[in-house]
Image (cartoon, rainbow, N blue to C red):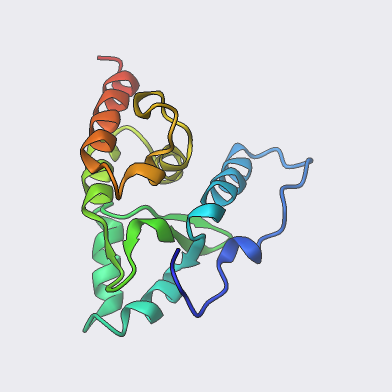
Length: 155
């Protein structure tokens, strides 16, 4: 759990409305719920504020990570959202295991699907969510990503 001075975004977001018809909105709420146990989310602006303690140019650093898809991020309600489980709390640096997996899957999943992949049970990991194993067993999570990439590509 990250000890942040900001209120995680999922506590500010309204619950899913049963009348939502957009798949993306439903998926965002599923991802937010899945991350609630794993430290929640923060906006890009909130992440930058936290990074200021450890990084000289946190906006540039975070922007590079997002553009290179080295971190999980997606846009919703005109904000860039980032799950907090992917960062080392001390320096707000992305976990090596997360970077390896995002590199493996970024060509087969969009940003939101990638975040969803991390929080859903994965058969290759004995039905554990990759987010729950990425700190303790990064090689197993990377192998699960490789298997799922192979399946997603159909080859």
